Amino acid sequence: MRCPFCACDNTQVKDSRPTEDNTSIRRRRQCEGCGARFTTFERVQLREITVVKSNDQREPFDRSKIEQSVALACRKRGIAQERLDQLVSGIQRQIETLGDSEVPSKAIGEMVMEGLRALDSVAYIRFASVYRDFSEARDFEEFAGNVRDAGHKK
Image: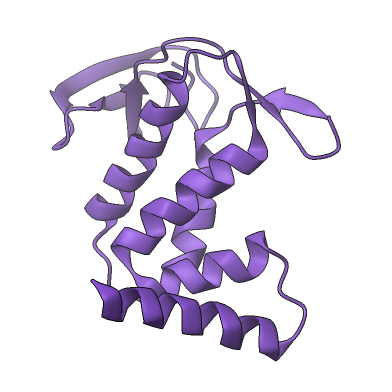
């Protein structure tokens, strides 16, 4: 593992343990070159997955894109980082267990929407406003009304 501080290739693992949700291994490392310590996470990847965008462009699946989108939607909502990590891990597991090597970006967006709907209604609306490209305040009103009505039916 290359040191993020000095780019030295020699690092030593000082501590390894599973994360709380058992989806990855957390490793504390120390660089033999500069002595800096840093943390890495190791996750199981079942297969190489390609995301097919709406314009038919293809790119490798990148978990960090989902993490960033979820974090942005949940910003200042007081949701524990652990719950966000669980949501993203759950979405990644869903994608990996689909059995397809190519997954449409629309399917991933819908998985994120479903996860956020169960987690926090405001984060759900925030994500939907970008994902569904709301262009007017009326779009927000209609969508928020649907979310509110669905909450009353439960």
